[in-house]
Image (cartoon, rainbow, N blue to C red; front, side, top):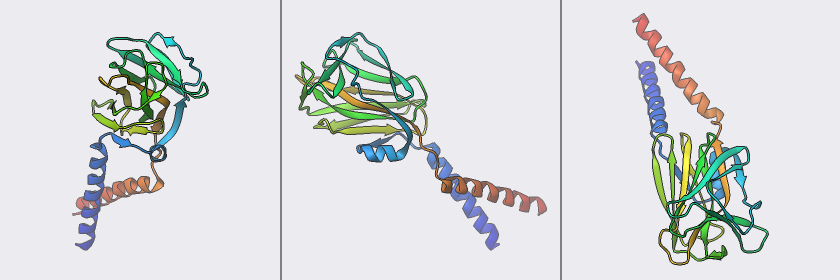
Length: 216
């Protein structure tokens, strides 16, 4: 009886763990180190190949080995390269109230970057907030309001499913364009050995219980 109760409890725990994982939503990280610890291999698009110039959108680019597309709209599809010091470049849209979107062309589980405001000339400027939205392949969506961002403000999103898009907007803040630097795209983290052990243990316990039932 004690063994049977133990087996039943263990199986129930394993089932609940799997159910919780299946229902998990998109997770938001506001620390670059925490984001990197939560994902697997990450590619970064630094935008340092851009110039202070207008680029007709959408743009096809890569972050490491991951391909993605940048688009802006609905008012103006153009995108701009910008910088403060002519050594570190970033990217912004052509219309300050537009939405700039990043859509992955290869499967990724995470996306993030450094988000802040820039002015008409592409130089860093203070912003009250930015709105970031991440969407995954199941249709799950999360909006994050990044308050008082600066050039060191990192935000990343990680999903249990493929993350298909990330958008940014400054909405209607006078003199502020939503801007991104060092866009991160990442695959899912490899499960820890202990996770595999729990799953295999649960399967073994299920088999043991089924065998006892057949004998009964």
